[in-house]
Length: 273
Image (cartoon, rainbow, N blue to C red; front, top):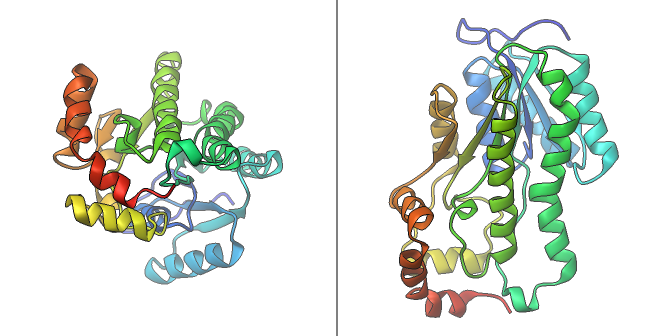
């Protein structure tokens, strides 16, 4: 595993994409391979990873695509990814995309679901980053990109646990970026808004429709990710007016309290309890 993929006449560092079999993950994989990046796909479902690998190779002949079957909530899964990254110097980018969500009243959300969401969205990405840091710190143009959410800035009813996990991941990203600011390794935050993926239950889709909330396709998210990748920015939030709400919420959260409070009756109509 020493050759670099050559696509569209370019060479680029390899990208490790967690949650690669999901909607955003698959779109990110296609966009990154199209840009010339070898890809290491990480997920729990081997059949879906194999199908994605086949699709990528068909769309981009000559690309290098490998996969690792791993549950990142298990030490053995994180070990497998860290071993793959450490064994091959082509991998210089970690895209922490794996995640989960649940739209539910916090009052009645089970302890098991709370623990699973926090583990999947926050604890496991942190532990994986810690394990691959030694390898990435020794590689040129290395970077870690944590895939967040607009809900990593704006607390939203029905998503209390999910918001907590993404707020935490954003704080971790910012703190680690500053901790490593005297090294070449970049630590970055990319935050989509509502996106059309299987994570959205019928209740979420119906609520978004009732509130006229825009939802992007995974492909649009991936296009903006590539734009972000080529920029000098350390953080990017997708969407308008979401960017405005994030800005307002950071400087005057009471305004956002009132705006979302005005939506609460509609949110409660669809919120599972």
